[in-house]
Length: 188
View 1: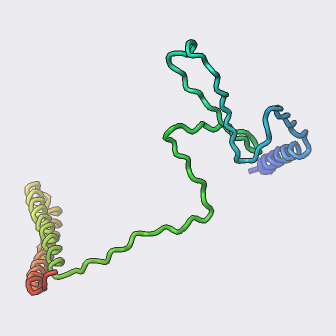
View 2: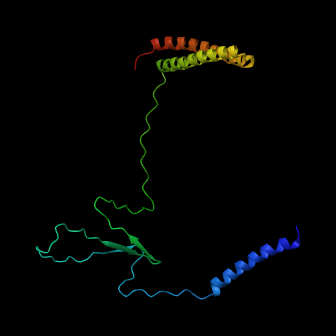
View 3: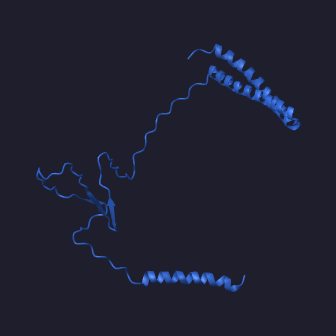
């Protein structure tokens, strides 16, 4: 990389930035537009709603269906102007934001239900049902792997099956102990 390619881009950027800053601070100030005489200077969050005065109409000259009167609403800010849509029927005006809102009340926490022997037995029954389904599925997958001739997959499934069957045996022993404890437990 030569010296020229190292110096020229940063120098050009610095000159461009310097020119922009010089124009910003030493250039001509933007001209202020004179305000129209009918407009008044208002605070930053004030709104002026201009509605036309009601026009008296004779009954003979009244149209069959009156047209709705449109109201114009304007908000004049110190920096510029903003147009606000008039509030219609059924509109909800949002409340102004509060600097420090009151703390929110949380729902009370319900006490945890006791994990009785009957409850634990019900959970063990559900877990053993799901594990029994897995054992059946794994046996079918192992048989289909043996039919395909995939011995590696069949061995992997056999190991997984033996682990699931061992776990199912321990679950059944725990279920029998919990069933006995649930029988001797007083009712709620």
